[in-house]
Length: 126
Image (cartoon, rainbow, N blue to C red; front, side, top):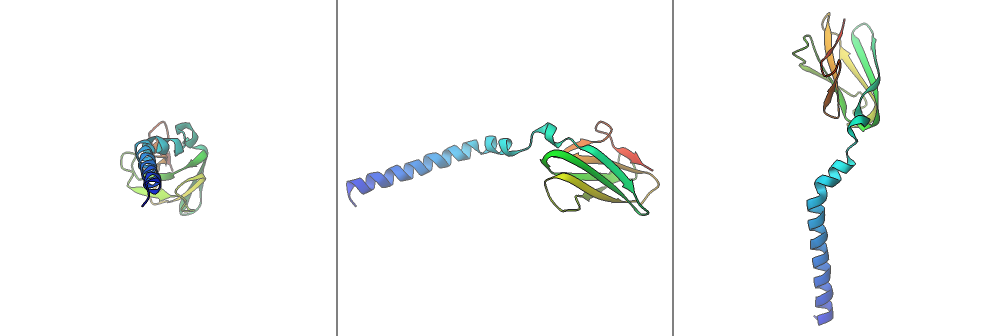
């Protein structure tokens, strides 16, 4: 291999290593940049509708955010999880159906891993 080819190969390898190192050390910053801002995942236009056997909880967010509902018979024991009916992990429009199993049902919306209800306490449906 000629000196010119060795030099070119060395430059390419070193450039690749430098770029790999940069990406490795900056990946956390990049991941934070790609996440929606906290205030863009606050649920708004929350609506609860009721039919014979279910409650339907719908809400919107400004950006695509993960969202689900934790619910249960008691406010301190939310054992059930309702997921977005479209099975989208991230969306701006969310709809979750909760099975009406009890006279009182407590629930809280989890949007981008943060709880939203009455402050951070569950809401009640009866």
